[in-house]
Length: 238
Ligand SMILES: C[S@@+](CC[C@H](N)C(=O)[O-])C[C@H]1O[C@@H](n2cnc3c(N)ncnc32)[C@H](O)[C@@H]1O
Picture 1 (tube, helix red, strand yellow):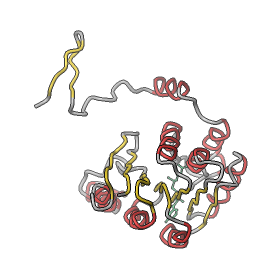
Picture 2: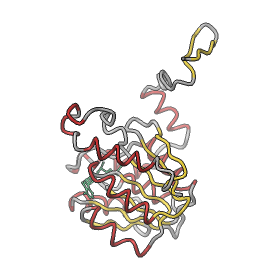
Picture 3: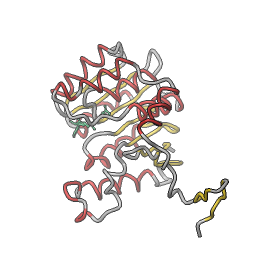
Picture 4: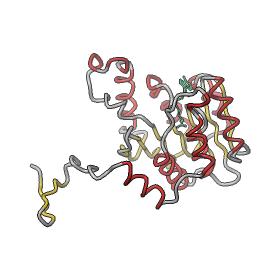
């Protein structure tokens, strides 16, 4: 039964999760983002110039960048892996949060995206920490085994392969390290039947398998969905 909390004259649903977040607007989020330190101008430039360079504007946003930065630092990451580089925006947030001797391997399938990312990462002054690999995640990840174990793995590429990337992460992220998956709401379709999910139908079983594995206590001690617009799933490796 829904427990109701009286707040002055307003009745607020409590403990259900439903109804929370109704305060959010672009103006409010912009205010809070700036209040919490904003976005490095070099990172902002990457985000703004991504579509001008012919790449799709599908990077994480600055709020998610701030969140990634926290996650990197909270787990004391020195070595990180990212699948899905695009123009290097999230890679810059991760790399900037790593210590000076930290390393990020980021993997991008599309050579054009990878070339733009390399330029952007260099312009942001982070090239010494970041290696951009070109190729499919499923082929590049096994080549990185030797440098592990890793402290954090951020998955933000083709949704159907999330379980493949997660299997690699289970083997290669250290105990206490983090696995983070973006778009874990699958564009609002993760709870639908595949037949109802249109072009994202193949992603439905994949994203569900991904979430099921994150919730498996044999592999992860805890997991949560951070309710960003896209849903950012986070789990701590056992
Ligand atoms: C959502 S974008 C990544 C955004 C980036 N993480 C950011 O926030 O700045 C997904 C990227 O994954 C790449 N991609 C798609 N399939 C891939 C695969 N099999 N292996 C590696 N990268 C892939 C796409 O080309 C695209 O650049």
